Length: 409
Image 1 (cartoon, rainbow, N blue to C red):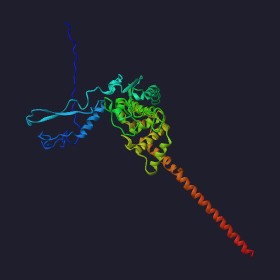
Image 2 (image 1 turned 90 degrees about the vertical axis):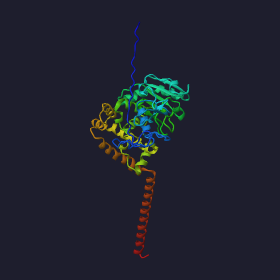
Image 3 (image 1 turned 135 degrees about the horizontal axis):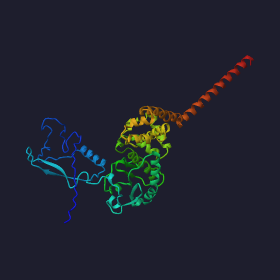
Image 4 (image 1 turned 135 degrees about the vertical axis):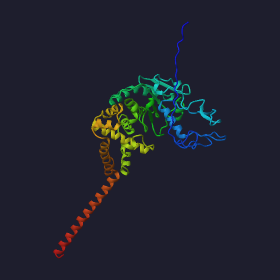
């Protein structure tokens, strides 16, 4: 009789204590070392009629951990009681998640190498269509077939150009999705992080996902789909270059690099930045390390400053300076140290020099050359010219009067 081949499947249950100030289902303190049974309430002791309420902060932290691990966060979960006979509390119980775990038992997105079919991606059959290239799995609602075809034809050339300029080797396939409405997002079988309403796209770099919230094929008042794709692709490549040390890269560096590879500096950027600098100082880069402001106007200033600083860096230290910095960060080196090694100067000194030039160029020059200032200057010149002409005429009249008196007329 042939022996059966057995396979051992071992599951690991990991417990983690979240750093909240109150318990999961009540407001009692989680402080360690207090007097026994001092941080309790009727909810803790399971009194009849009490209503446990989940700690919102704990829910946020747990969901963030799930997204960071590339897991799906279920849209709904149901809690249930699980009773135990504790010696010190015979009627005690635990509250557990019944039906579904908060984080579905789903394979992490980062580990998926095969392209998902439209049926696997969407809840409604036929809602999505898909295209595949060597480095991308692209998806869109059926109504955006033309945009998806255009993007699929350009994706590989764009990747080759940007990765070549940045000297970064792309790792693994990237999922690219065109999702322009809430209905499109609701069709997905997995969760995505929230973003500002005014954004036209975003990247979930840790899960190698690009979401495009526009499907324009040509430039309009919004960015077109290919321009947005280039911007978000840079974020994916920054993650590929730095791996587990991606969090060491400041947000302003990441966004500035993306803007350089996305579009040229425009008149609108000049106007927005000048309007800000006439009344305020430049935003310190240190305040843009972890993220940008949520308001559209302030975020626009942050994007503009990031673009200009990266332009300053490339102009003075070489076009490959950002790539060199990223490769050093990818080895675990602190960003400031990597910046110093590549440029030979401390980041704060380079920033101070750049801020002085920025203030002069986008505050004082626009003030001097603005339309209002020019009209004021023209008016003053006219008044000065009129005064000088009036003064000459008066002096001439006085001279004639003196001559007439001398002749005795």
